[in-house]
Length: 366
Image 1 (cartoon, rainbow, N blue to C red):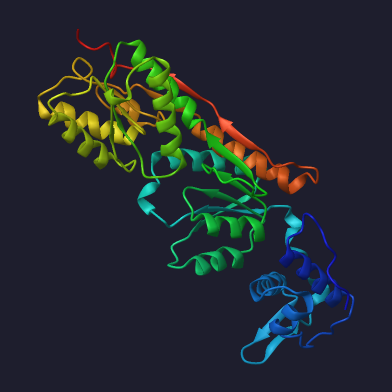
Image 2 (image 1 turned 30 degrees about the vertical axis):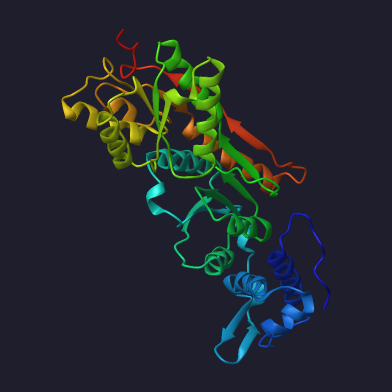
């Protein structure tokens, strides 16, 4: 039996599947002949059992082999009638979502997914949703590795060690909203720093010199937006003591809670910058519901992302526009290039943002 040939593009399980397929079709293994066990194949090709299992699963899906419980895996009798899986040219792309915090996915992510669906429909590839709800990292890793994916788009917050394993050993991939470096994968991020810097500068230009910020859960998105706020504040010569920070989680309720705390302060800020629109909508609801303040006359409210919520509030939210649909389509383009262009070079793309002014912000009362 010949050994799998090394390839920069073919990942290990496909190398093994190609080798076994060739040996079956060329008569090295005969119909109804038993294949070596998974342990024997693992030792022979220096691959782990998960990789061998994936290779056998691919051949089983093509009806080249079949398994008998407690006995082993055998060559099918009708191998000459088998058509390769890729005959129709359509690939299956996995949209992989982390199970770390199921509440972390909202309208923002839905729009990205819509862009992904549109991009895949243009090239007639399949989309498979993969949600990692397993309790352990090893089980989550095995779950993805056992699925026969031609490519993967990882969206959301993952445990760094798990994501590194998946990208290294799994199918070609694109990371969306990630800041991990050193991985052989295209990365698409939002210019969180630039968007926050521009939004803060806009509030300062209106005359605001005291600002409350409602952050998101810990991670690079929150860190980058915090840096943008601080640097804009510093560049305009304003003291950092006039910045107030309230911890949120990108959910509407945390915006409500932050606004409630702000209303209880003796020295209220003249503006609130929420790090996404859902929290801004919650803050706006609480402020107006209190009957104590008017928006924007007494307190201006700024959001981030420009989702549908931003124009469904009253007054409509000033916010930072993020091209979410374009991010999804770009992810598909990057993955398509990876899968079809042998000379593809991985890149990291920062999607630019744009300040969008609406009725929830104005100059503070003098």
